[in-house]
Image (cartoon, rainbow, N blue to C red):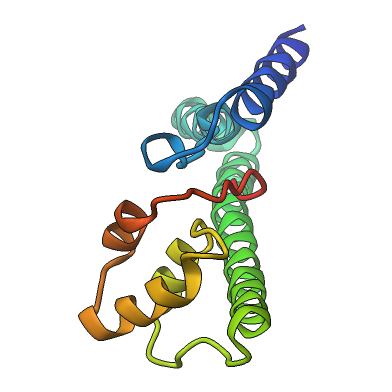
Length: 163
């Protein structure tokens, strides 16, 4: 029942973000805290229970193998959660770089300037087709941060696929 409630709340949140709200600088960051905190809290709970269990588990009851195994598995779960999220973000960053480079090439006949950093390119994805070439050039010349680029965008192009 808890899992169904969790899934419903997540779907409702995503629906609100994608369909109902017009995306702009003030609301473009999408975070799904339930997806991270619920899993991390469960793994942390298992880790704490493993420590408590190991403190009460004596050598006469079978040794330290079981508590150490439980603690190791929960620690491995924490690492896997962190690496999985990091790897997914790296893949999204590479896809955004390729998409924006192609979009800029289609609009201007030239690829994006190599001086643009990845955070700048990621920020440029929100610029409309009319704004992109000039804003990309300005970002290189003035060394704009990703925040400055996003604040400079007049006609916001929503990106509802990045989480």
